[in-house]
Image (cartoon, rainbow, N blue to C red; front, side, top):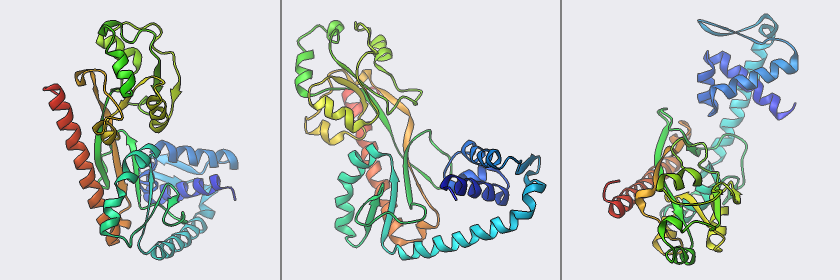
Length: 313
């Protein structure tokens, strides 16, 4: 059976067992719309309706009723297999994280945790001390709208500001502020584009009353790490969050050529979600405590940095 069909069957079974798309979404760590799409895809593949939506919740159609007990039994067996495999993980912690968060923030800090708990083995985005295992990850770290679920932990918001190499910051300082960006290469980072509060070059330049012809032209980057390589190579400026870049700003390898007062806080947040059953393992609880403590350091640094540099932020 195709993996997509298995995921659709899983969404169908959970939605019926738990009584709603929302409950199934919480169990699968996806959105209710995604659960509905998986069920719809299965219905279209089979050519029959499988669920009826009513005031009392979801219920199976006659076409599904005869197979429902077999479907439930099958996933009970899969749950048993997953539980056995989770027990075999021992001191392993499996994490799925936004790639830039993992590379720029999490991995550089892991040394302090491993120094205290050297027996704990990590697999981050399929790589690390141990290979990727079958089953759900223990922790998911993402950037998006803040969720209100009990098992979601807020890490920090980000603060967006133009960044450059030290060399380009010196070049900009040779021009009058209003004209300094005219003809200067602008790099566009799409990591924050879904955030309602995140400026792009066009809106930022307009807000600062600067001059720049065709501010939307330039190379686009999906990853923060990708645009940082270009910035360090003096290829241009970009607007990026500072939360993942504290070390680079602190050691001077990245510069902030414009006042902090021109920056914007994101509406979206970096947040972590731990599986409740994973938190029954002491090493996962220790990692969660460590992660939240590290996030507090970053949050405090951002707050102090923006206040000391701007006075009112």
